[in-house]
Length: 89
Image (cartoon, rainbow, N blue to C red; front, top):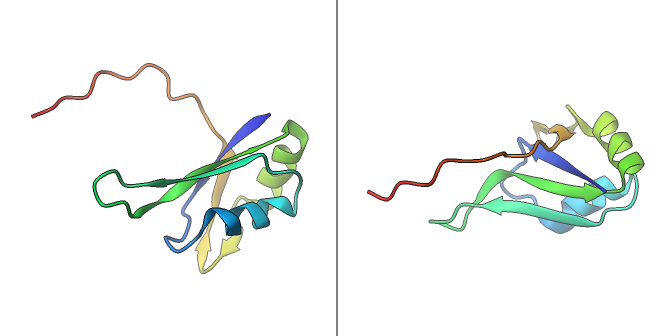
């Protein structure tokens, strides 16, 4: 299983729409769109989990793809690594 980063996503996009788009290139295991913690509004990016071969095919086909007037950024997600603790002011 491979996790794909999906950026420059229209704020109106739903998980179902993203699953349908990526489903044209293989099996979609999971879609997670990120919302702002404070407002609950979409942040314009998310993640899609697919089997490795399907993910590679989807990345090749959809990176730069025009979706609702926006050129999608699609690539393999990178591990965030260790992050410093959050400060609370």
